[in-house]
Length: 424
Image 1 (cartoon, rainbow, N blue to C red):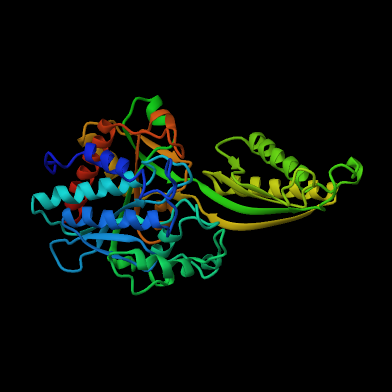
Image 2: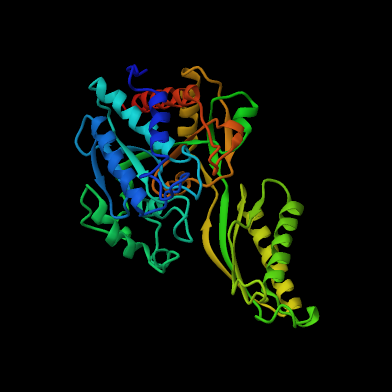
């Protein structure tokens, strides 16, 4: 077991996450919002570069603006264990969703560096710039770039100002202390031979660990996701003179569709969830019947067949509503992420590390999506969940305890020990 020195601790991990929860590391004055390729994202990376350097890592930015800190192994060009998570956030976010895993990775490397210890593999700590999809209508751009699954169609998406990722990267690189000579995310893909495995530590974002009184748990797999953009088109008309029977009200139609989504998800049951998290309407005037409404749809399940059956049922019902109301419906699939089992051998190793650190073996499935599900296309993956208070996430009330964070650090260091033994 690596001896953790006094300054290397779960307490410092939490303190650093808290430090990154306010301006200039947030794009809003009150609360936290850190989107991909914004000034707050740049400030976060520039600060993390110094923390990685202090921990003994060399640092670089890849062509997707992923920050990579590398701690070399005991032989040149050794494949790397990547320890990573994301540093972007949803609007009005908590401080630990994503950054906790990155800060824990830095602590692990600094513990090794303090002892002058090198392993038969390198360690790379990666801070992915986009996982949430808060700026562009798709998520996980950065891990997909690294895993080699990003497409040109993905990079054609636009933010609310009509700019593509490549266009925004042109501005972003001017804010960075580290040079970015290449800003084409399509060139950021890693070679499988250069990566040994991927480990991501993340808050659970659910109530299971807290309900069972556990600090940590090993993730066996991540649920499948679909993300859609839906546009409902009707006819704008005067709210005072158009009778109810003559209306083609896009907002009323969208409201019925959203209720149908909830009904179908409830009826199909199991672990299926369906969410409408964004809605916009036009022209948006008090005395005008809505002409057009757009909204998002996120459908998830641990089983792809269950997810796809639900998505098909929802689409069929929405089209029926549109026809009955004289509306036009446009449904575009933006994202299709398959369910992703974690590597069984690595998961077993992680559960053994939990035992060695004094915690019971506990495995669970993740309903939330994570970069690990994308990185599985590149290498074997493992995930460690950390208890969060009330299971609350994507909310300023998101909270982790210092003892639980220390527990995660201890488990990760044990995991590194076990992986070293396996690779020696």
